[in-house]
Length: 288
Image 1: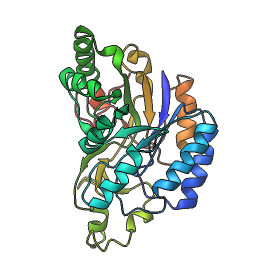
Image 2: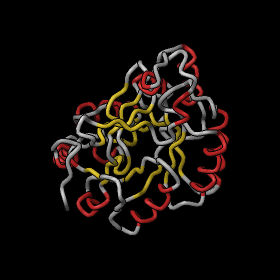
Image 3: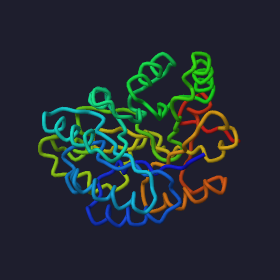
C-alpha cells in the first residue's frame, strides 16, 4: 500500500503553505496532492506557485498530483482548470466532470476524485476508457460496497486498469454549496467575505444543541465534525485499497503518515469515527 498526502483543504497563509510543503518533501508520503479545491478566492497561492512546488517535490522523488476545484462557478475558474489540465508534467485529480472532459479530450490520464461520486462498475468502465488510472472512492462508501464493486470490475475485466484510493484519515468533506458557510457564520456575504476563512486554519467547528461536535465549516465545504480514522482497518484493506490518503490539517499529518507506514493505529484526544466504512452512520465508531 502507498500513502498519500491530500491537498490542503483549508485557507492557510502563503508562508505556512510553503513551510508545509518543505516538510512534505522530506516526509514519508509516497504521493502528494496539490492545489486549491474549495474556493477560487483563496489566492495566497496561484497555479504558478503550485506548479513550482510540484516541480520541487518531484525532484525530491515524490509523485505529484494536481487537484482541481470541486465546484466551478465562473469563466475564470474554467481558465484555471485548463491550466491545470494542460500542465504537461503532472497527473491531475479531476474533482468535477468538466475536468474529466478536458482531460479525456486531451487523452491525458487522470485521477477520479472522491467528489465525482462514483458508485458502480459501469461508471468506472466508462471513466477507464476516458483515461482514469486511479479512483478515489466516495468518502461514505463502505468496505462491503467497495468489495462488491471490485468484484464486478474483476468480472468485466477492468480491475487492473486503475488503482483504488481511500481518504482514510482526516475530516471528511460531506457537502458543497455555492454559498460560503464560513462567511455566513460571520454575517458576511460570499462576495464580501473578507477572506475570513483564513482565520480558521482547521475550519470552524459547529456543535449540536447537546454540545457534541457536529460539522466543520470550511468555506463552501461542510465537513465531518469528527476525524475519520481508518488506521486500524489497514489489515482488512488487502486486495481493496492501493493508496491510503491522509487529509492534512496541520504538520501532524506527517507523523500520521509515518505511523501508518509502520501499521500503527492512530489515536489522539479528539473524537475519531469510522462508521461509513462499516456501512452505518458516519458519526458512529466501530472498535476494531
